[in-house]
Structures are given as structure tokens and as C-alpha cells.
Image 1 (cartoon, rainbow, N blue to C red):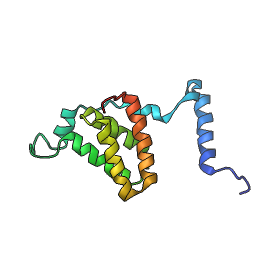
Image 2 (cartoon, rainbow, N blue to C red):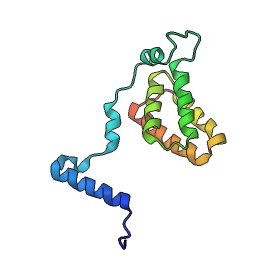
Image 3 (tube, rainbow, N blue to C red):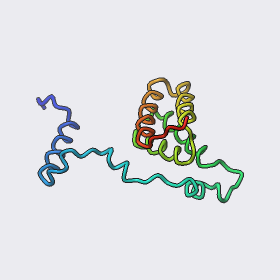
Length: 135
């Protein structure tokens, strides 16, 4: 194999060329656009699904989502989409920007600065998309 091209980059380029050939409008397609197709789940639905309706003394949706965000950060914040979606849902459940930042920042002690930085960047994107000005 004498081609120095990254095989993944070559595969993605080929897929983009095929998509353009099938539909020229796909030339500017971005996978991040899919995130906007998923609506934010109402707080009440999250609490019903995650047990607060059955276990009235259990964790509320906001706390559960902040814990989920902490876990995603601990995994190195590798799943950008999951981090952004969790932040969007946490905001919908009543989490303030400060709480989200503190949750991610706390994980820097355990997951390291690179994981924290990556999670903060994804969270900032998500909060910008939701225009959360609550601090």
C-alpha cells in the first residue's frame, strides 16, 4: 500500500462524492445537523421515565442528567453528541450554566484536564444552541 492517505479520510471523501452525485444539496451536509432533529425531552417525561414518578424521594431529572454529564466526562468526553444532548436536556430540566460547568470541572480531578476541556467545549456549543443565559 503506497498511498499515504488515511483510509478513514479516503472512505469519507468517497462517501461525500457519492452523496453529492445522488443529491447535490448534500454537499454542505453536516452530521451535527442530526442533533437538531431530536427535540429536548420535557422534564416531566424524563422524571417519569427515570423513576421520580414512582420513587418520589428519588433523584430529579436535573440531578440525573448532571450525573450523566459527569459520567460522560469521566469517559474522556469522547461522545461529543451525547455530551451536547445531555447538556441540552439538563438545561431543559432546569440546570443552570454554572451547575453544568461545575459538574464538568469537578470531573477534571478524576478524568484529567483534556477530558474536562473537551466536555466544556461540547457543553458550550450546546448551551449556545439553546441560548441559555441563566447563570
